Length: 286
Ligand code: C2E
Ligand code: CA
Ligand code: CA
Ligand code: CA
Image (cartoon, rainbow, N blue to C red):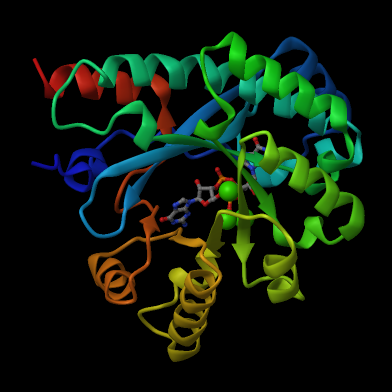
């Protein structure tokens, strides 16, 4: 019997509090925040498109600003990259996400009829420019083993545009990461150039269809055609397809008809604090 995680997570309280108007966040504030560890991580469930089973979580960074409140990543990831702070931020995300994920796996192992740790993975966003930093991945690998996790339980999500900056060096690092066991996902697929070329040449396990297509699927025939083409392309190359940004039932059904593998979106579960999911497990099975 599959527990229906779709229904389960739909009502989890979102950690995405409406951020107060953020007029100016600056580099010095960000540097301080990263040095002081004022970055928190929220998790969005990832679900099997057909049965509704939980397949994993995506870790998403939030900046906890003392005056301005919770700052969304679109306002600081680019700045972190430009300021050379992105690798420190990535480490902060792993330092929080790995112990949480390990705790979740230990909790879930105690229940029947729920996915086991072998069926679940943690996805973490990686800036493509970090691919040139071999030490970062040594560190990440070490953090995984320190937290009782194996690299095959981790999926690294890379954005397509960035991965093209230095294709030779990127391919080299991606191959090494894959050989070490990490799964690789190409994020925001469909928004950059030469997507197909990269898919063929690089050792990805998953293609993530950009939410700009998914969120317009119900109104735009073009979006539906793009989604269909990406899923077919992914499958013909032996990769899994994940759709993000699913906000309504109609879109989920459309994706099911196309045999999309995994689904993420507000309708299935909003990003929420780690405790939310641990509490949910405990309450669900008391
Ligand atoms: P992304 O990796 O494409 O993540 C998906 C974004 O869509 C997340 O926004 C998520 O909260 C949002 N989302 C999920 N489902 C829905 C939905 O149904 N409707 C709508 N409207 N939105 C949905 P978020 O958390 O604000 O992150 C934005 C971007 O920031 C991410 O896009 C990712 O590229 C980047 N990011 C987040 N955390 C990190 C990180 O730790 N490192 C790096 N390098 N980038 C990060
Ligand atoms: Ca992502
Ligand atoms: Ca994405
Ligand atoms: Ca994105």
